[in-house]
Image (cartoon, rainbow, N blue to C red):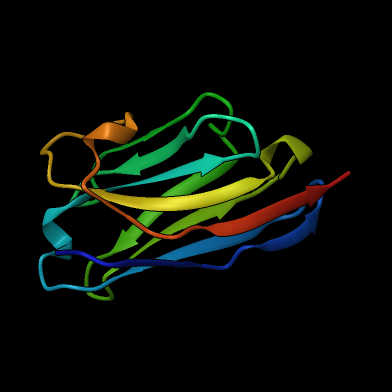
Length: 124
C-alpha cells in the first residue's frame, strides 16, 4: 500500500511559478514509477508528467513540455512538479499517482494509487 499526499498548490498570476510536492508513505516508494495528472471542472483527467522509479526517465504532455519539470527524491519518499511560466489553462486540481509498472506510463488506469489532489489556480 502507498498513500500519497500532495501539497504546494495555490493561486498565482500568469507567468508565475509553483512547486508541487507529493509525499508518499511506505518503504517501497522507490520501486514505483510516479505521475502527475490534472483535472479541470467538467474535463477528463489529463496526463501531465511521469518519472521512472530511478528518476532516469521522464515524459511530459506536449502542453507542459519546456515549462514543467518532474523530479523525485527517493530518500525523502517525495516526487515534485516544478511549474514555470504558468498559464490560465493550467488551472486544475493536480493529482499525483503511483504505478508498479516498470516503464513510464501516461494513462490513468495504469496507476495503482492516487492522492487527493491540490488546487492550482492561474489568473490572467
